[in-house]
Length: 315
Image 1 (cartoon, helix red, strand yellow):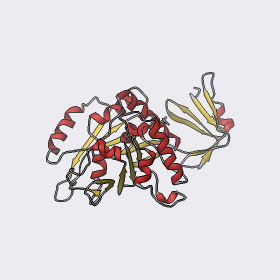
Image 2 (cartoon, helix red, strand yellow; image 1 turned 135 degrees about the vertical axis):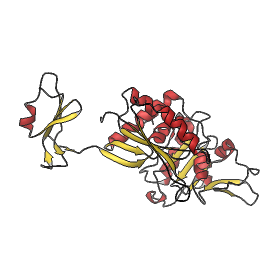
Image 3 (cartoon, one colour; image 1 turned 90 degrees about the horizontal axis):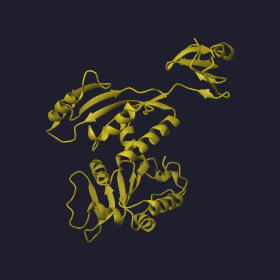
Image 4 (cartoon, one colour; image 1 turned 180 degrees about the vertical axis):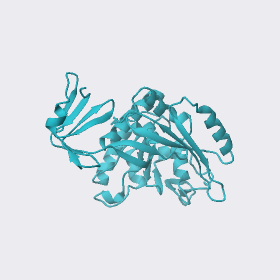
């Protein structure tokens, strides 16, 4: 029987013996044979797709055991990325350009992936610089999990003013007149960052599908073919999981995905678990595992769902 796909003329890691081969044959989504080019090319048929690896190294797909691909996919098209930007001047120029093309009421979001130490200036942007770059479009810039910078338009959008109450799980920095400056500090935890970001407008369903497809393609570009989504605050089931499940049903989910469900409201954990178990049917493609950690040892409540999919940006 001829192979459906042959990859040859490559240095293919096997994680076995031999450690590298020149070619592999794939049929029905599985590796049917591995060996030298001449040997594997004998399995070629009239319908076989043959790929020349051009002597490049090929590795098995990578698994990321803790990331947030569901949330990342829903928001990917909304984000401005500063990853690898060499200078703060470049970053602020990108911010200004993005603000100019962002339609109301959307925000410009810079969510992680950068540090001041990557910039030639070796410092973070100031609030004055962010306000100058984007005077009218709301801007939310998060630095790691320790703080966020909001311009004046973002403060207005979320309703943080002189009369806003203090956060019990975060700090809104104020000037000597009591007005918020735009600096949010994750003290004692990052809840203030999550809750503020959650106030921003979301994409429509069609754009969320597009955003998720592009984000998963970006993960594939880095060699990731499977991941465990760690869930988290303000990521609600089933509402925020509909897009990834639709991609799965349509055969468009390009990573194997296991995800954790977290209850979002204290003292309503049992109700959530009862609701989730009713949503899962024996014939479902999802396999669900829920567990409960008693409060005396942990306050974590979670549920793991595993969805199967084949192994194989907006500017």
